[in-house]
Image (cartoon, rainbow, N blue to C red; front, side, top):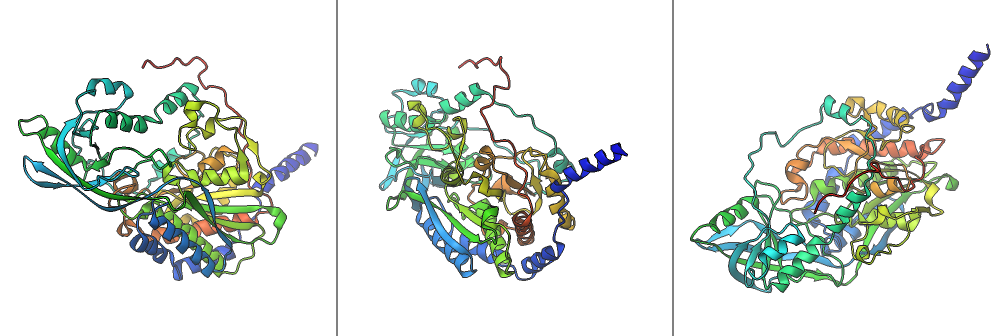
Length: 534
């Protein structure tokens, strides 16, 4: 009898993590609103077709900040605001063109690299193919670049794709994500990464000192795609030379001709503008106020900023539209959640997840300032996770859960539990109503590269959904064809259903979601690791 009592006690003690039933009547209401009266594609179209690419602090991003706030107000959300953080310069493209004039006239597919200066008219010069990957490469090219347009990428061989560019996750793909990943902390690898963090700035200085007049890099995808990503946004650290990214096929043609008796001459005309009216970037925040002020809040987020080679559709107007649609759905249903539900549209994600980091520092936790003078010159966030100890702010416990969407417009297939085994059974119950929509997997693995990362790094239960990749990684991510045409309406409506449902469940759960221990500085995974040779 005593054994039976003890067993029953153990079961009851474990029950709170999974015992609270999902309110499936509310799920029905969410599904009805999301599927029959959706506005997600209208929201996505306005962000892409009307506003376009939303580079942080550009005029287009300012327009998006204003418009999204007004939409939240129109839907009746409360405490709608733009929360600023220090960023730097805005930048936009007015006009751009590149062409080869010798040995024949040929327009070339290219884009200015973000935050590089204009050409101030048309510049014309011969080319030098000078692959520059490391500071140690500089000596080889010293004295050979004056008056030239420098092609800085070692030309690669062309690639003909053998895999389909568009795909959905298979059962085997999903199963592989549910394999525990051992953490790996290597102080030597951290140092190697930080040692290269300012390479672009050093390269620009070298080329300018050598008298080069511009530089060109090869796009990292084939198919005529260009990206234009660049990171020199900080005030007072603008590059000296215009930079251009060229389609891989056009770049390789120039590199081949450079080895013949008819080396090319290029013309480049880049009319770009800097915008210094306000150095702050802004996160857009809006709330559905909860009924229990002491219960804390839950949060959904996606980054509103994008690159500007196209319209920033799948990266990440898709996620922003889903977060906004979840807000619209819940507000339209007139819900009165226990916890406040907060919606965040982040800025500066593309330059280093800066908007959500600013939110963490302001509201959740701090780390000591960087003391190394060389590291202090790096961009915000590049050293942030490596500074200890972590100090929670008073608001740390108030944020109960954060859900992020930033992997294109593919339908949600599940959620990453980020190593939190206590959250797994909770999420399994929350996903159960959506098995018929294809969402079934709670994967123990962590995932990175987007706005839940810094929340996870300070012990907040922050999660990224698993999405079908479609053609996100193969040809859309950051590219010149990331437009509305590649967004999947059915998938985005499904994602809005699940986002709204997870927020409702988290906001009304009796207990907050289980947390991981507050992070502390790890020991090296391999205490006997040797430095690599330079």
